[in-house]
Amino acid sequence: MARLTEAAAFIHPECQITDCTLGRFTEIGRGSRLAHSVIGDYSYCDRSGDIANADVGKFANIASFVRIGASDHPLNRASLHHFMYRSADYWDDADPDAAWFAQRKSRRAVIGHDTWIGHNAQIKPGVSIGHGAVVASGAIVTKDVAPYEIVAGVSAAHLRWRLPADIAQRMIALAWWDWPHDILRLRLGDFRALDAEPFLEKYEP
Image 1: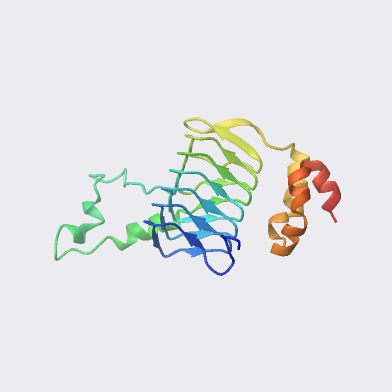
Image 2: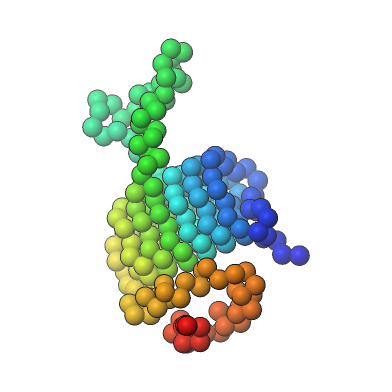
């Protein structure tokens, strides 16, 4: 029997999941922490992922120790410390700074369909990763990544294109990630055997 199903996400032990929506056939690796995020169908994160305030598309491949939407600190105030906004942890008569937490939640990281985020990479709040893009291991991404772009380094910079621009646009138009589960199974052999252009030639309308 298949390990992953559409009925419920496969969640490994020692995970902390708060206010998240997990799609069909999703998997969350051991020790991961997710908050205020949406994980699209078929996407997974490996062990010790840390994902907050993020919208993750379908078929995203998120390696171990990836951090997406890391929380930030108020650079313009007198102090950086979280006593200012987690104030109830320090004083019985103080409330948390609701406005600060709302502002954090509003800075969504967006991860496109069919993406690959390498081991120990970081995606900063407010950054968008385009469909089909690849973020190399250890990269720190501080600005948007185009569809089918491969980026690497600190701060992440363009390395090369995963597919030529015309092929990438045709793949986005095909949107195979929206195909039904039974169609994916029917065409599994071609996913395995065909490179991108012959695959497009076979399945483009």
